[in-house]
Length: 291
Image (cartoon, rainbow, N blue to C red; front, side, top):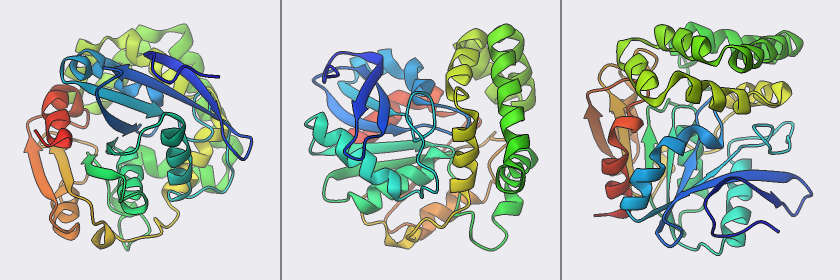
């Protein structure tokens, strides 16, 4: 049985359908619960840097791996809404009733799904550097070229995508600082500075864990382009949309459009790139707590 309360990056839970779900907990074990939906090519460790801020902010940060990511068992054919069932089971196990949710990058659509499907339990949601539904006309073409390539490979030549992800994991393992430095160079100045401050080796460690199951990462990209199962207009919980004005990965029109389409959503534009959450965790947590 996993410890329900102790801070750890390697909790495991056996779900009702037999799959294993892995999750991390950071911050104050008795604090206000915030569920974190990790980004693409990331995992439960992507909010590890927020642990000290969560602790002083009185936040209990719960960060699960999605199916096929990190230590979580795969779930072929899954949809974004399917993940909300895993979340509900995890939170029941942790004896958490009311909570807030946040999702960064790819995790933004998962945070939106949790807000939509579990709304009696969700007090507030934050979509951080998130995208519109990629099934909408023209949306896929507005993704960065690398994401479009991985989506195309994952859908049409999954063996090729798996080879790419294996090679990335090997590089992160054998040359972590170089791996982090190259990633920083590709992301632009604002995000490069965040990765350097975080530590290139730390970023590589997170990436290595995220890429542990290449077939699971393929499924992440396939799920990305499946229908959400709901529209942004159908989200009824209070939502904050966060975006960096120096984000070189996200289409600059998307944050405003998301905020316009989600009823009552509040748009927060801040100096920073795609990794802006690392600069504003305290403010994000305060907003999610309603303080």
